[in-house]
Length: 149
Image (cartoon, rainbow, N blue to C red):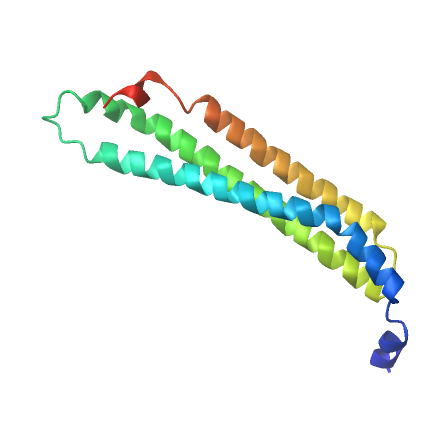
């Protein structure tokens, strides 16, 4: 009985095309977020490799020994990037839920605007927080130790 009502109330092609039109902006945000996560992961990998390299310095190597003082800074940078990655993923999840919500609401012939707006705002807040984390990481990223061999 419930399935029969759902089949009779399926959205028209016009309604679906309207939902697809509304899903365009979130789809672009989702693509940008995916690229952003890739950038963050690449930066984190560089920090991890640098940390491994510094940990490999033997104590008799007096020329490179001062590099070991950089380990606490690298830990802070890695933590900022890890947090930014988590926030960017939360943004991507919110954006995906927004797209799913729009189609489910259309299928059940319900208004989707309020839920979509809330999810879009949440996605943007997560994205901005991730960008702020990246900005903080970049601000502490370059010091004179980075130029030593």
